[in-house]
Length: 381
View 1 (tube, rainbow, N blue to C red):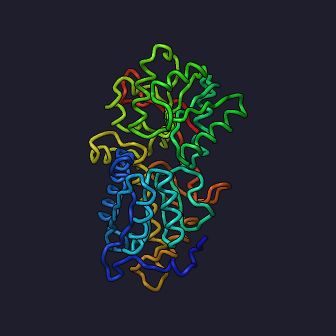
View 2: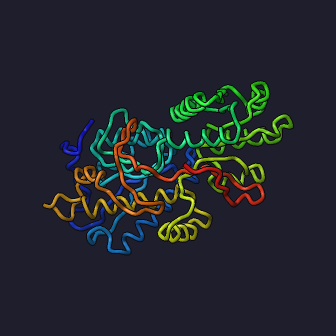
View 3: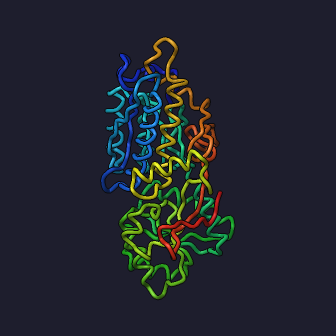
């Protein structure tokens, strides 16, 4: 593990002559990435950068995003981190997919490049504890336990998971299994590398499952599984859930229509937004021409944190205009900034390898069957 005092951390952002302060951004903007998530994350980042620059930038210098598309591919992300480091960005931000964020975080740690992860939840973003990486989203172990408690509270004890091979999905399955088993629940694993959506229906009947969780990609095979289950007369009472948040985005409702509703998922918003959150929500809605997801708020908060860090801790006192990676990375424990969803502070948390905001708000919500564009809050944690 590198520490912020390592020589690699001393590299400065390009443009110490007074040009822009640049932040490298990783996003899934093309398939097979969750393009809707990438678009919302970028909207939040761009809105916050616009506001920072309207307020005078970073010590008079404009803030600039240098965006790279990961397409949900870890190797693409690693190559992008290398490129962005060579370009001299002050810090790295973004990414939605946990497996991709883990690859980026590992590479950023090795290079001594500060990385504020916006929206990925995998607990172990790096194999070893690192001082270079901080995260805004809650760890998977916390959010998915809240989701498991929701299932138990709704009376579900036999829960099937339709899962694709992935470290992220396997981690989620393990969290659910451990939490539910200790409380009398059972997890039935359905391997989506061998099953068709129709075969999933047969397995649900055979195992007498009362809930099915979609631990699969979006839009496929998630959409096809929902359609098969919802139109199988044997499964009219089964709950379909999507803890990873597939139903959050408008594309879900477009593709599934009435079948998109009543599928509980996790999102990271408070029950009520404060004044800053409400103002940002209005601005994001105008920018996106649709309701902003929690991911858009995560993007906005990412820039709020980095701008505060760059203004307060981004220099070493000898080159006042040159953001210093060492000082940026060393500043995570000193952050205390108001975000759209509450005050953001980072701390060390047992079992979490990065600096963690403790704790972002967690909700279990679904789309209202009577009005699929409206979300119902089913549980908070």
